[in-house]
View 1 (cartoon, rainbow, N blue to C red):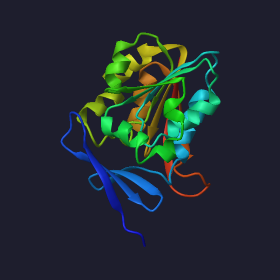
View 2: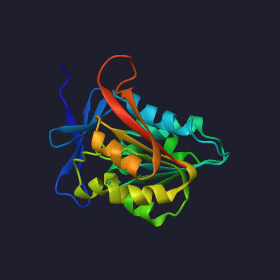
View 3: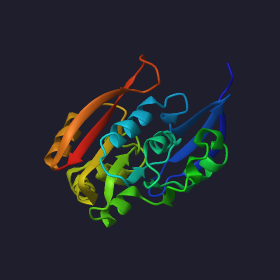
View 4: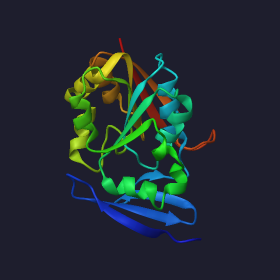
Length: 223
């Protein structure tokens, strides 16, 4: 078996741990300690996050905010589904992840970062959300492993009741907040409902086949 090779490491702003970019043949992985945050073989649930969100939009020029660049699967899945008038802002906390996207991971990302509809912002997505007032038609959160975050204590605030309130306020009327998670979380479902969103909890496959692990996508619509 081909051994894993560490290509690079990156400190997480505001955290004490380190991300590692690893490669085994044509397979890539981003690790946090012993936890794998993402793998290039498993794109199904991130693609589902994009599809389940975009198909619920009903505006000719949607404004879309993606929290977390990662391996770029969510962004790449969004772009073919969006019109030319759409605007997509991808907020990534770790600058090295953006550098990896233009370096060793360039083949995975393709030309998505250079799409004229796309803007990349190196920032905490919570800061961007709190600065917005009814600005976004869709907010897609793929941060850490979902509501049970791993890399940064500040990410937990995104999924708390006090964190969901500004996310709802940042949505335009009829806007959609979608959240990816490695697993179910009944408490988070209740928090989403209590925030005033109409919520769907949708199990999706981690990979692109009908077998294997399941992840969860929550889709909440602002009335």
